[in-house]
Length: 440
Ligand SMILES: C[S@@+](CC[C@H](N)C(=O)[O-])C[C@H]1O[C@@H](n2cnc3c(N)ncnc32)[C@H](O)[C@@H]1O
Image (cartoon, rainbow, N blue to C red; front, side, top):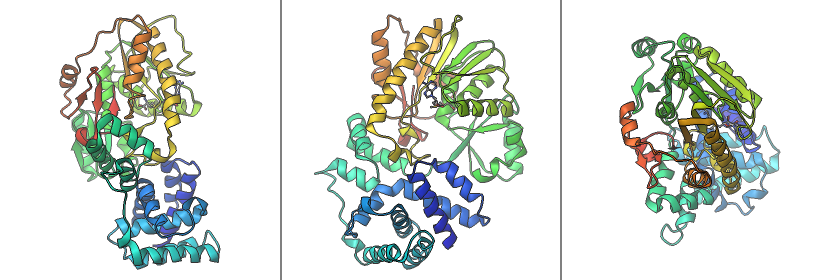
């Protein structure tokens, strides 16, 4: 299984340099034939990404050299070894150390390998002596190191949710989430969708959101003929719910202001029964390509894509509905993409808030009287959610009729738990909603 450690170390080095976890991991997994190796590599990579800060805290107790001065290869190998010792039952601790140190030999020289071995042996001898910061005296430090989150996120959440709920959130988002798909009513009905999955022995479980199902065998679903025929798309329950909340009718003219890769665009088209018009904007060419690929596969032909900054988009004709599914820090997706914890900064929140406000501002100028705007994000910061909407509404002379969200969600058939904030906004708190984080 040494190949697994070698590939995991390689992938983690690439991710540390800024690569997307899913892209670099899939590229490397394609070169590995053994199914068990592939599963183990995936566990090591995502496990280390989730627990990185906690692992580093523990390692720093046993290394005289500060972690920031270590080579990337050494640090990645140390994390991979420690993750196995702490989180996997199948590998004895000494084997984890031996195999990982062997794997490291293909990346670096004798001195670095010896150093790594020394830190890990010292860890094995003394791990019972590790003491985490005190949860009462230093709550931010405790949560950050114990659950492996940057301190700025912990502070943001403690302000928003308090200590207890922040702890629940940290725990919940450290588990790997189920994979969910939305079947595409344009190509298949629910009965046929379920029959096909049953035929291929893939277990399917309903979620609290209509049309959205948990599937247990993610690695094979993209090989199903039904996927190629556009029968379903991978999409989270909260993301699926957004389309239902907007709920366009056939024949509507809809604007999707930041649409890539098109999960919600294609759902809106489906709800419109492929009749009417959707203008889908994105600032990046490659995102527009993904929208077009998704539309082609799913049999959607009412979408026109435009490469433009949504803040600058103008149109003579107003829209019945506008979706601003804004670019955001994505903290509600940390369980799916744990590297978000480490790639995002407090500064991003400020920069994104400016973009979000301008997008929403422009959306309000593009919707017709009596039309509907949905501002949504998959993040859990006040600055990108409530503050954006409150500040934009203060700056305009629009009269906004609030939507009765409880009524809307019950009409849709949503059966999960949700929060209505004091201002009347919809929020999904993952430990309760059992979905991605969502704000609308
Ligand atoms: C949260 S994602 C949208 C996800 C999409 N609604 C879906 O369900 O698949 C935000 C998108 O906004 C795009 N974006 C970022 N800044 C933008 C801008 N100024 N104008 C338009 N699109 C932008 C990003 O490229 C990204 O594809």
